[in-house]
Length: 61
Image: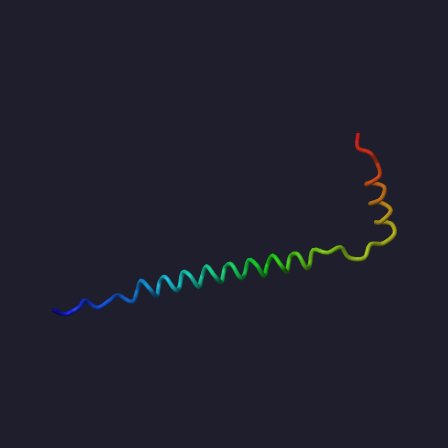
């Protein structure tokens, strides 16, 4: 009795889906790291520093 040839389509599709999901996860991790690295406060001038101090110290009503 002859054996049925196995379909190659299912393992190839599974590998493609797994690779696509892995790529999306890697892109998300890289994007999160880049956002965290670039979301840093730069140098602040004296006027802005004084305004921030005033806003922080003023009690809310």
